[in-house]
Image (cartoon, rainbow, N blue to C red):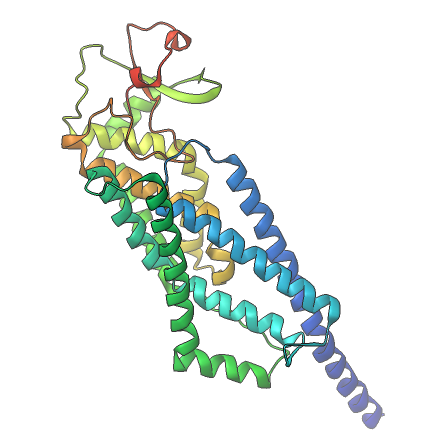
Length: 338
């Protein structure tokens, strides 16, 4: 009886050890597939008339890398064990490729945030005057360079190499890297939003009470009446901050609450999931609002060359009280920026 139980336990352990990689690989396939569908949905929902910027190109490149990872997983799952260019590919490589992608995504948060911030600062100050084609090429090669640089760092780091090498000995177990960069970046942005919200609490409350929802140029927008004698140059940083907060949270409040829950519960999200296009557009809106606020002393509210957001409509927010119907306005230039 003891021998039979021991043999049965051994058989159950071997069965569990054999079936677990298949479960993990299928789960990875479903997760990456879901992420790609989210990428397509997000890219389809964004505004198409936004100007060229670094973040747009990086989001497209991220969607391409996710699609490439899904194709690799699908091929390996289908053929199971095959040789290509004298390299044998097995199910182990599904975990290996996903781990490399996780490390790469995990180290991209700070560089992408910094480069996007510099890009918006330069575009706002209009210190760089490149032609449309040159600008596209510049963004394209910048995105390629940052991917190659981070990937080279990941593959060349001895600690990461030892981690990936040790994984080969225990192919039934497939841990994934959790990025500390995304945690601190999310913490930083949530704290900035919290401090800004507390600082301008009274102004935000007044604006929310005056909010109206209407349709303008086939878009549903929020607008806030303001005095018709108001200047077209922002004079009060505190009042302007409250307008930015209302516009930002009107779009990204659910995402902000999600970040708060993740931070409070200390949820460990794998890096290959955490680096996603909705997160990048959230960071993008935060950067645009930050650039607006720091440059509010020289912000021309009639300037149509300001950075445009694919999701937050920073324009079409505040209209003169003298205009009874928003549909009477024909040109966006007559609408004040929030």
